[in-house]
Amino acid sequence: MARTSSIFLFFLHLVLFSTSLEAKSEKGRKTNNREEAAAALFIFGDSFLDAGNNNYINTTNLGQANFWPYGETFFRFPTGRFSDGRLISDFIAEYANLPLIPPFLQPETQRYYINGVNFASAGAGALVETLQGDVINLETQLGYYKKVESWLREKLGNDEAKMIISRAVYLFSIGSNDYISPFLTNNFTLLINSSSDSKYVGIVIGNLTRVIKEIYESGGRKFAFTNLPNLGCFPGMRIIRTEDNGRCLKEVSSLAKLHNKALSKLLFDLNKQLKGFKYSIFDMNSRLRQRMNHPSKYGLMEGETACCGTGQFRGVFSCGGKRLPVKEFQLCENPNQYVFWDSFHLTEMVNKQLAQEMWNAPTNSHVIGPYNLKNLFQIC
Image 1 (tube, rainbow, N blue to C red):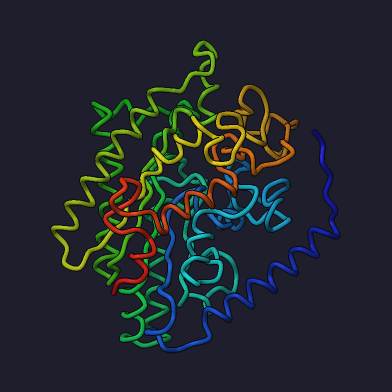
Image 2 (image 1 turned 30 degrees about the vertical axis):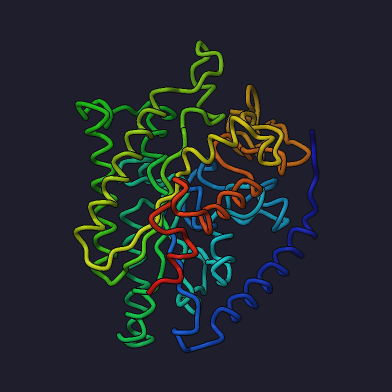
C-alpha cells in the first residue's frame, strides 16, 4: 500500500518536536537540588535503543532510520529511531519523570547531560569487529560516556557530578548484532576462529564486563539490562534459508540462549564482587516470545509478520524503500496491531508494553529482577 508525506508537514513537525524537547528538557533541569531531581538515565546499545545517533555518522542506509515511514505514528516524522514511534528507553525516561534523552551526537546537547545521554547506535555490538566501521560500537560508546563524565565534573564540580553519576541508571541493550551480523553478511570469521559457540559468547560477555566495570569505577552503581530475544525468529532471520520454509534460524537462537545464561551469571557474580553494585535484568526473551506466539492476549493481531517490509513475513529489510537493492515495500494500515515494525525491530505499541513491564513488574514474577526499573531509579 502506498502512502505519501508532505515536505511542509515534515518540517512543521520537526519544529514542533524540537520546541517540545526543549520545553521538556527545561522541565527536567528546573532544579539544581539533585536530592529532588530525577535520577539521570545513560543509555548504551544498539537499534533497540538508538534515538538517532546514526543520523550523525557515515554509515549505510541499513544503519539509519531517518526517512519515512519511520517515526510516523508518534513523532509524525523520522527521528532516527527504528520504530514507528517511541522506543523502550523513551518510555522509561517518561516513567522516571525525565525528558526524552537526546543522542550524544546531536548538536547542542551538553546542557541536558544532567538528565542523561543516549549513546546507542543501530548495528552496534559488544565486539569491535561487529559491522566494523559502520556503527558506534560499545567501546566507542564508553569513550563518549567518559567525555560526558568529564564535562559534568568540570562544569558542576566533583561533588555534584559524583552524585549524578552514582544516582544514575545505566541501561543496556547489546549483543544482538554480534550474533545476527555473521549470518546476514556471511562473515563467519569470528565464529570460525572461536572453537565453540560458548567461546564466542564468552568474548562478547567479556567485552561487556569490561564496560560495566569501567562505569562502576567512574562511580556508576545502578545498571539495567534486557536479555536477548529469540533472534532466530525475527522476520528478517526466518527468510535467510529458503529451504527452512520460514522456520526460525535455530543457530542464532542458540547463541542468544547461551548469551542470556552467561549474562545472568555475570550480573549475579558482579553483585557479589562489587560493593554497592545494583542491577535489574529484564527477560526480554520470554516477554517478546509470548507476544509473538499469542499476540491477541496483548491486544495485538500479528506476531510473526512485520508491519513494514517485503516478501515472506515482510522479512526483507526494505522499509522505506531506501535499502538497496529493494526499492518497493509494503506497509500495514495499523502498526499498533503488530509485534514487529520492520524485519528486526518492534512497534511502539510493543515497546510501550515491554517498558511498562520493565518499570513495575513484580520482582518475584521471573519477568524482571532483582529490581524493577521503578525500584532501581528510587534507591540510593
